[in-house]
Length: 183
Length: 183
Image 1 (cartoon, each protein chain N blue to C red):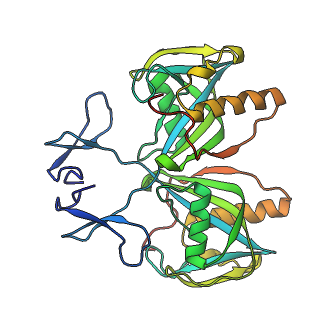
Image 2: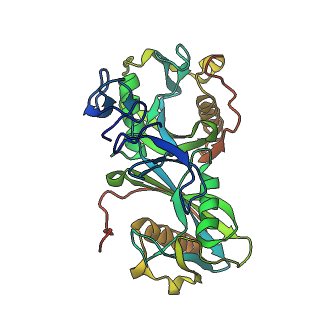
C-alpha cells in the first residue's frame, strides 16, 4: 500500500504507538490500515466412489487439477463460500457433510478450509475458471498434476480416512511450499 | 475505500468484468481491491478446573469479560495467533490442545477460531488491552457480563463437553448478533 484508501494521501509503513507490527499508516489522516490472512474455502465433492476435480483455466497453476475452492467473500459463512465456489467452478450442487481439513499457509497469508461434501446428482460442467471437470476414482487421481499441496493433502486424507471407515478433522501447517507457482 | 492504495487516485464500487460482486476498482490504474472476512483467533486457557478470562480495557465492550482473542496476523498460523493473543492480553503462556470451536459472523465479516488450551503455570496479568485477568470456576463465570456471543458459546460448549467427558469440535453460525456493541 502506497496511498491511503480513506483520503488518498501517502502512507508510510511504521509501527503505530502501542503496536508491535509495522502497518500502513496515513501521513495525513493517521488511519491505520490493517492487513490480515485470507480464507480460501473449498469442497471435496464426492459421487459414490469418485471425487470431482477441476482443471484450472487460470494462473497460478493453469492446466493443473484442483478441488473447487476460492476466496471467502464478505457476508458469507465458510460453508456457504465452499458451496458457492463448487458451483462457480464446476456448476455442481453439493451438500456439505463436514469441515474436514484446515491448512495454514503462513508464507502466503492464506488459510484453506475444505469441506467434505456430496454431489446432489452427477451433473457438472466447467465454470469460467475451469478447462475441464470430471469424476476420478482413487486410482485415477492425477497425483502428479495437482495444482496445490493443499489439494494433494486433502485427497490423501480423504482416501485414507475412507479406507479406515472414519473421517477425522485435521489442521495442517504447510510451512514450506512444496509446489511452486511456476514449476 | 475511496482512493486506490496503489496509485492514490479515486476508486469506484463496480462489478468487474467476469465477476458478480461489487469491488473497489481504481478509475485510473484499474486495480481491483478485494476485501475478505478476517479471522479472530483465541484460546480457552484452562488451569485445573478454572478458565482464564480478561476484562476488556478497550471498546467495543469495554469492562466486559472475554476469552483472550484477536485478529490473526500475516505470517502466522491460527494456533500461533491464538497463543500470541493469550500472551498479549493476559501475559499467559498456554499449550494448545485442540481447535475447539469456529464461529461464522457473516454480518461483520469475521470468523472466530477458538483453541482449547492449558496454562503452563497459573501465572498471568493484565496486558495493555485488559483491565483485569482472573481464573473462574464454572459457577463463577460472569455469564451476564461476557463481551461477545462467541465467548458465551465457547464457554458453554467447553463446560458441557467437560461434564460429558469428551470434547467435540463445532462450527457455529451466528447470524443475528445477540450482543450489541452499545448495549
